[in-house]
Image 1 (cartoon, rainbow, N blue to C red):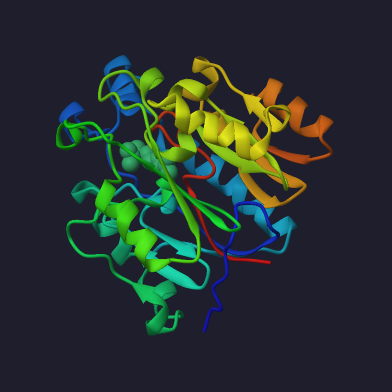
Image 2: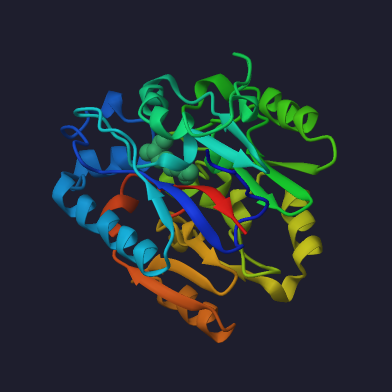
Length: 304
Ligand SMILES: NC(=[NH2+])NCCC[C@H](N)C(=O)O
């Protein structure tokens, strides 16, 4: 049995699911893609090659090995995208909450059955159908749960809006002792530079009291100011529109002072090191073409 425990984004990692790029399938048609950055690369003929993405993910697996983190991988589904393990389920405290994910991605959860079998059935939660929620939108910060959502009336026309207000309400009811704060995120089906696909595409805590943030990812300035107030302006690393597009907020913490980051995130990695953080660099630029990065492709099961 697995004793699940996750209460924040940065405590020492012990067990994690890492997605896989093996048998990722052929280049999707534009109408099959479900995020604008993939569409951009399909149109440009620069959609990432499976072999390159497999190499990038193996570099992450190596780092987990170095830090003695137990790694689970999904069972392979032939010709199916299983890179972004983060979104299909998520752990809050000792609960494993199955996501109600985009229908295009539904089969990804079945591939985790071997992991799910190791979890006490009382700790597995299946939300009702009206709840839309994906793990990339759920972020833990000790007594807080942050949730990315989209409050526009045109929610249903945005394939990039993945967590609805029913999802926020569901988490509030499930964890009455937590401070649940939702954030209304900028969405665009066509321009990846104006699209915060999930909360982790524009914000993420790092260390004990710091965070990476992209101001314009928030539709409502008061949501952004809530985080400025909570973390303190001097503890926030602000990223630009291009840095957001390159997914600088989507690094992944192994410990309060150890992160995995992309090798080309020079400005961010320099800031992290200046704060005493050990930065394990990996190439992840090919994966990033699908509008996800390191946090998106990992799902923590146990942290200290
Ligand atoms: N947690 C994340 N930000 N995940 C990114 C997932 C990207 C994937 N292309 C999708 O649209 O679903």
